[in-house]
Picture 1: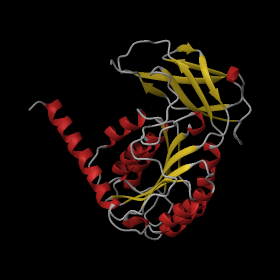
Picture 2 (picture 1 turned 30 degrees about the vertical axis):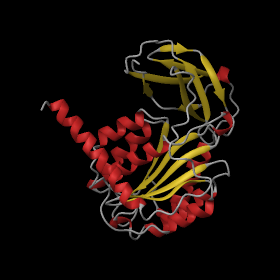
Picture 3 (picture 1 turned 90 degrees about the horizontal axis):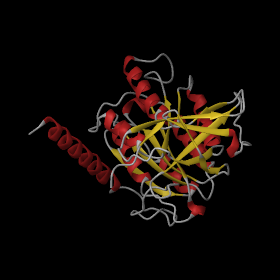
Length: 325
C-alpha cells in the first residue's frame, strides 16, 4: 500500500468515525423544529455556474463598522490581477450559523457564564436567520438542528454540561458539513454562513487532524469566529496547552475571513458574542467572475482594497480554483 493510499484511508476512516460519533449523540437530539432545513440541501452559493467568486467583506474605521460603501469603493485582486466586481450586496442578509460550545471537563466552572453569553447571542438572531447548537467534549453532540426559534436555541444551550476531553476538530468538521446542507432556493433565502466556536483548550481527542479540517474550512464559504478562554480556571495567563489552541483558533479564523477573540475575563464573553453579531449584520457581499479561466484546483490569493483611506478591510485570503469536470 502506497503512502498516499494509506493517508487517504486514514482520512476516510477518521471522517467515518467522526460521523459515527455525531450519530451516537444525535440519538439523544431533540427533533428539529418546523423551520429546520431539509437534510438533503447543499450550501448556499452566489456562484453562477462555477466561476463566480463571492466574498463576505468587513469594513471598519477603527471604532465602528462602515456600512455605506458602494461597489465602486471596492477593488478585488486575485493573484495580483484586478478583477471586475459583478455582484455587490450591502443589505443585512440572513445568516446560517453553527454555534459550537466546548463542554470538556476544564469548562466546568466557566460553563454557566458561557451558557448565558451564548444564549444572549441566540436572542439577537432574527426570524430569517438559522442556527444550530453543537456541544463537544469527548464526543460531538447535535443538541439542536437548524432553527430560527430562539427558545429552542436557549433550551439546547442550557442542556450542556461539562465532562470529558476536547474534540474541537471533529466539531468544526461536522459543523462545516452541516452548513453545506443549507441551500438558497431563491435570492430571498441567500444566507451568509458562519461558525461561532468557544473553547478553552487544545484538542485532545479528535480523530481528524487539524490540517485536513482547516483545508475543508478554506474550501467552504463559511467564516469561523473563534473565542478562546485562557487559563485552567478562567481567562488569565495562557497555559502551554492553550498556546497550541490559540494558534489553531487563529488559523481557523484568519483563513476563512472570520475573527478570533481571546477575552481577558469571563465577564467579557457577552460583549464578544455581541461584537460577532454586529459584524455578521454589517458585512458586504462582493462577487466577481475570475479572469483566470484555468480549472486546476490551485489556491488563489485574494486581496481586497478600498478607494477610501483610513478604513480597515477584512475578507478571506483566498480560495481554491474549480477543478476539471
